[in-house]
Image (tube, rainbow, N blue to C red):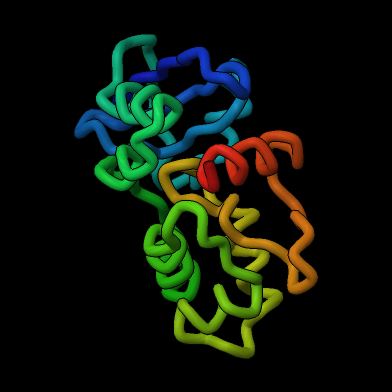
Length: 163
């Protein structure tokens, strides 16, 4: 499979998208480092070749930053994981902008209220960041917790969504 890679400028820095031949996002994040983006893709989904090109998802990123917070919801993603991970990624996509959940509430939203540690792991293994909005999950005390792309980006996204 050949995938497309595209980097767009955002208010939070360069944002790179890797999309498969069907336009589904495999990986995305706030970097211009193509190797870092490829490393986040599950080996079973990793494309054989990648070429630079325009992705449909880039328009959604720009629309999101321009104020259409639901533009990212219309982008198709693909990830490979366990049944619990897939349930978690689906639950993340249902979190409304401006209404972040705690890891405990997120675990409950994915149907596993006792799986708080697993909830954090699911966020950490989320390859198509922004489109699967793991940045909307916080610690029980309301602090940011972790984020693969840096807490300054997570904070900026939450501020953007609460405006």
